[in-house]
Amino acid sequence: MNRIPAGGRNFEYLSGEDPFLGYSLAQPAVKGIQDNNVIAVAKHFILNEQETSREYINSKADERTKFEIYYPPFEGAI
Image (cartoon, rainbow, N blue to C red):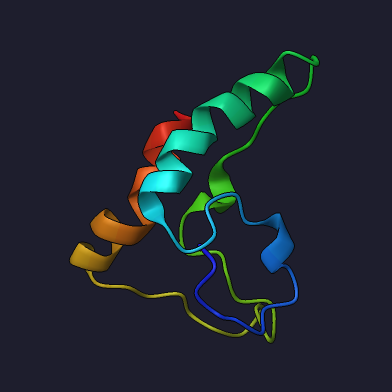
């Protein structure tokens, strides 16, 4: 999710700021990757948006935030 406007890797985020868009785009993206004999990995779809000091921060979110914002794109991927 693109939740930090100044993030240096925002161009890589599939869903921008919309969880439903992420859900809708994740499955075709995974299929397109796998159609080219490349393994698609969805592990970075959840709580992966911080680049600055990412080795030292803790990405915690409450359950509601996870289910409403982060899980839909991951669910779409699987």
